[in-house]
Length: 285
Image (cartoon, rainbow, N blue to C red):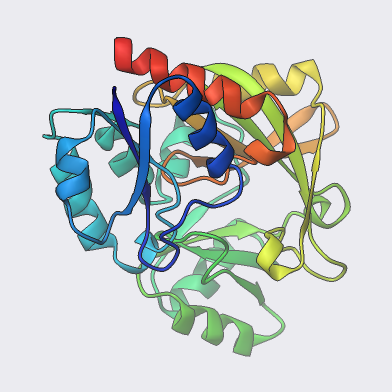
């Protein structure tokens, strides 16, 4: 019987909705499934046949410790999904700039330091009166700030929020009207998609900020563009979530999530089965 460990975190050690469905499908396929926090004892990961990094949702608060943990995963005897080298590449949001240099359709983006002068200079360079600042180490919109040139206090607050460098981008108004679409790929094949919408007056689509989620069928051209983005990654992922804003006949890339993405498995009946089949196949590779 193959042992599979789904990595969680100390803050939320139990399996979250969707991952419980995945675990049931894996058990039905003859696997022994357990969960363990990445920032707990390492023993469960040393002995597993397959480690699936799932809800390590506090890694951005301990980036050095998480990077060290990925290094330890790289030398375990079992397989790891996603590959530790790919997750390490995905840790800093500067990967978005790298993807843009390869041709990904990203909004104008500039790296800024945690200083008001750097943020203001970036806004001037990009010609922005209103912008979003995101920390390079961030998850779940933590540390995200909206800044306005006409309101210097917003720039000061954003600089104080940043613990490290940040990314400066224009605020995309269509996030408020069209929402953000998450496209889930499993071993390179499209699985399902959802559209996430913020509550009125907000741009934060996450459920903890009042956002909503609904299944959606993206147009074929959007799927092709997402696949093209996947092809730009340093190596092929076992699973990926590509977050985009779908505009008129073009995509605007927001994130490529390869470490601990919510995969919305509970919103697509066949998705847990697809993911379980892919993971069992990985065990056979």
